[in-house]
Length: 95
Image: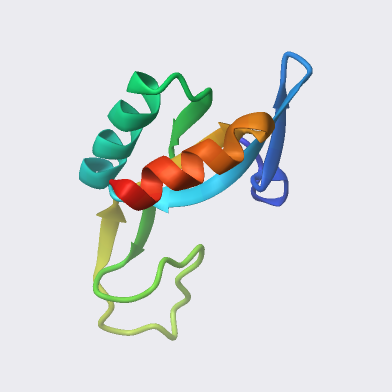
């Protein structure tokens, strides 16, 4: 997994990929299938984190955060090849 500071853009084998954000695993599977069928180049990574249930995703819980319930928040981060961004955006909007 990439460091959080480099998550917006990564480079693999000299090719640039741009982050398209995080998806729920069920929606992500549908989007990934659609991208694969239309030959859009992408990378999907597990971005599951520990967070406070029913609240935004957090990276740290302190002792002052009483009565918070930690929960595993499953999600997928999707990276699309720079040249395929427009096509991917169109396919994701149709999904």
